[in-house]
Image 1 (cartoon, helix red, strand yellow):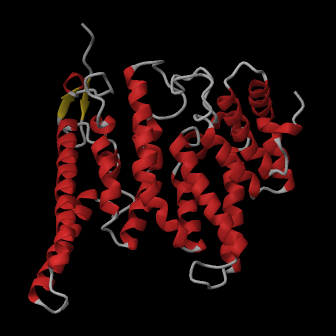
Image 2: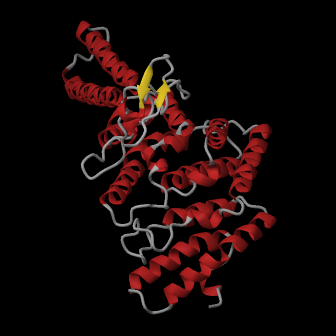
Image 3: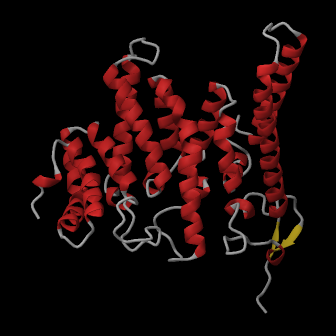
Length: 364
């Protein structure tokens, strides 16, 4: 028998390792990858608590949606008791759903953050766009801030990088599904408000992302590349426009801070830019020739190239030169269907066009 080593818990009581259930994604339980993390003294209790929160949010959202449908039958007079009662009930249901997310504090005493646990379940991800529809702009900002502050602990980052360990397994396929769900359900509603926000807020979110996460590591995931692309793009647009969303000229200090944040991001990725591409043999591809899997990487590089100095552009070209040649040669080989070859060339041109180049100029 394996020797069972005793270990004291924080409370001072003795517990055996064999008594602590170990959780890993399996073919029987792929929902809630984080259910075994955090308070290891009672992981099952944490899982049940998270599932209850998800159900409570669903109930609150269903109530909110029903109340919206009933709103058309209310009297036009806002002082009418029925209207006041409706407003009170609507606010109560919204606050109940918001409280269940526990997203008011970006930094939590528990690990992972309660919102991270919430989003580790598919059902938790799916309810986000329906809930955000009822939240205020400040609540959406708080939600986005909490996601960014805990980004590297999200299941789509911890288990969704391009370095899959179980080739072709059901777990790998489920990881891909969770990543796609996050990209389509969580990201759009949480980042939509950036189109109307100021450079100051964009800088704050950008700085938080780099301060709280290992950039070189999270950049190997599609969600992180998508987040960084949106933040970079919005920052560049605001700097170019030279104004806030409300028409107030951007502060010179904010423009300077945006430039410093860009340089910090670039230096964090220097020497690791090739690692943002999925390996050709990755089971995440499903097909080794699929041009869709590295689309996020080319989009990110294009956005990065737009704000790069001449020296930084040289660095970008030197680091991804082999990847560019590989894709261009593959597209021109004649071994691929025309639509796939065209898509590969279009992906590469996203990056090359940002540098004033074109795939047709690449010698093969």
